[in-house]
Length: 207
Ligand SMILES: [Cu+2]
Image (cartoon, rainbow, N blue to C red; front, side, top):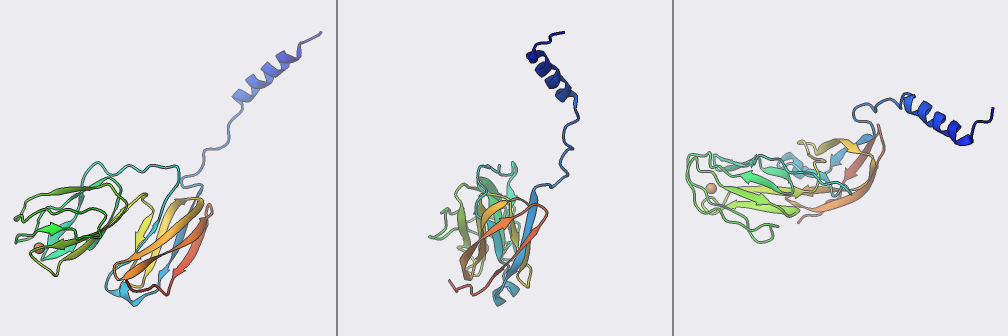
């Protein structure tokens, strides 16, 4: 019997189509972590922020709902708010007195919400990467920060400067340490699947 070669090829393809595929990857496969410490006494008073500058080829959608930046007892809460680019922040005045939230020059977004009373809601959307300082025209002691980021891979430090970013897709990244009292510093890291890279930020210079 003389079977044409192409018929064997078709049979092979049909057979391959019915073979079980590779097992589905376990949750979190292809991801690693980075942990470390920001070595500065400042972290006892104000937390630092460590983040991945950029994850290439990915677009991270901001949350659909506004993220809250409260004002309570003349303090911005949270003190530092990291958000994804495009996030709308809700500046509802949940204090017992009026506030006038604004950002000074040097912030990536300049805005002034005017003086507004208890329970009044004001919104602002942040579409540019970088740092926004929050001040209040009524209370000079009020200070807060919004840091606008490209991706959700960031972590605030604890009071000892420790941080950990988990579930990071494997790859090489620029990792940046931010602190309100210090100049930012960056280093390159390579994240491998299932592994944790350890880094240290030290000798950070005062702003
Ligand atoms: Cu105020």
